[in-house]
Image 1 (cartoon, one colour):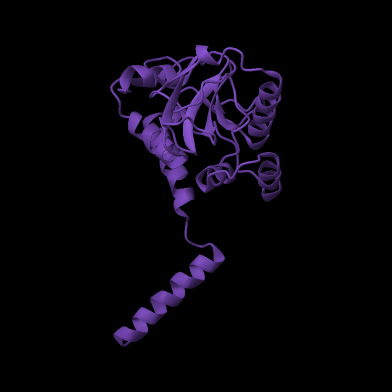
Image 2: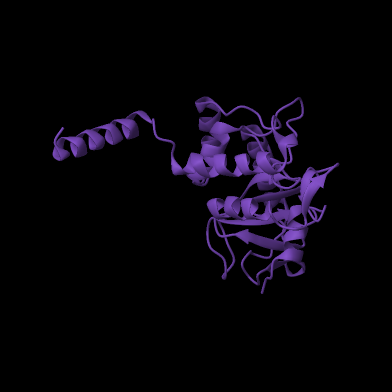
Length: 229
């Protein structure tokens, strides 16, 4: 076969694969790479995540959230819709749960309701690290949770950042988060960070958390091990 025909054949194959979805997307790969790294480091985590969300469930999520969610998050939910088991528990984010579609909607709607009722009288009490990356508020209807610690705290996407922040950044917020933390600039960067921490010397198996960094809540651990201005 002449070289020109070989090139044309490859182009046709790649185009067909793209049209029919035969090639794994970068969004899907990011989540798969992270979970595979977790399972390699901590085999006990296998089976803790549920099967992927259906198209109907994803449509329900997109209708409920008034912000454009990262395609990488949607791809992750299509592979694993939160935790497996009766209570949907998992510890895929260093002891912090990946929320399901219903969990994201539930927590988001709760925070939206609180944001409407909370007069923000105590805004001066709240700070963020790094400085002014997150608005000094208890909660904000533009914060969309995707992970939860089970004690009223979330990790989520911030669509209304402070003057030194950026829309789409990943932050901590919740009942105990007086000093909120900007964790990453984006959801893909968050996954990259989580994967890099799997080899951190303070990362270990935990009886209560599955696996953790310094055996504490991942947000508190990040404040200890990463320098912030």
